[in-house]
Length: 477
Image (cartoon, rainbow, N blue to C red):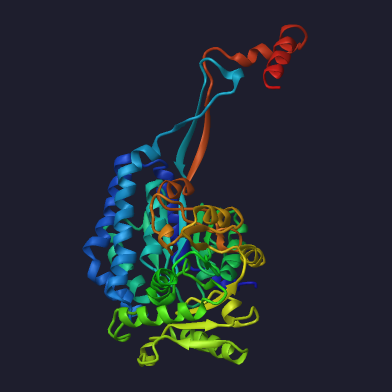
């Protein structure tokens, strides 16, 4: 789809880009002390504005669990910033690399991390604080400047960031922008030195096409339909506790959530019974503020239509909160299980991003892998089994962005593990040292010594040069 030229001309974007580019060119390699100070400034931004940030996200959702914002957005990013500060000096240090035999004895090879320049970050609405600060930590640690565009569904948070960010970092180092009016293509068409995007595969393709015009490197975090497979040896009660915790968190609106469940044939009713008991115990009043609303009316209507489509095509749809009345005016949606699904149903055609859990069944592990091989590669795979060899078998015979064994989503929260997709679920990694590396140019540098071993191989090639080359080839044969 071609974007009108008028929408690609947003002076607010281009002027900020020019200012940040000039700031980068003025100081191409910020010191350790400066980077550390900038990371601590970001940490203070989260700590000193905690209540305002929680309120802004809640306003954008209509109803967002305060606990979930604290636990999934503020705590992990405060930890991530402090973790980066702790390891920054080591990350910045040039890495020693081995030499070729022809370069001994006095040469050196180093891999030197350098800032890439101006980085663009496109933030989704589902975890708008976390998906701002998780990549931003790597961007600033690596010594870059950042332009951050928030989602059109995060207007309150975007305005708050615009108001407060200047108190912590100057606009030529960090700037926030709201969305609306189709400004996204203008942002992603800027000649960034790197662009980080989180969103759907469909939008990701358009973003990558925009970046291709400037040969801008991209990191894409795109989601997809992440499955959870329960092995016959694993307790259904425990699987239900862990899967439904994930499915209910943030109203199911998480890119690494369980998008569909694969159970051993004949265990469906057991899972339904356990799921119903535990979600009613955890949410005795679905309207009390512990449970997060669906983000907007369009998404709410889409989810309701997906349930109706499944019913019309023969599925059994189970409302786990039959005794409660969710507040539809606030877009509070009860969790639903869908049994007897087929691949032509809407719930199996696209990422659900809501509290709906389709359930498929299987007889053999080979049947599961054959099915997964026929789908797009997901952002996550979850395997529930106490058999270590079976878990290893599933990992070896499938491909996904990340894996959780006997747990959901936790692998995406660890600063020590890189996070990223593969294929339809994205490309590139961030978190921790991988985030620092992603937003750095890992520049190979060779230092020649005072004695140049390569002089031995100068023409004419008869005699000693040929004899030495043949000797080296023999050593490597």
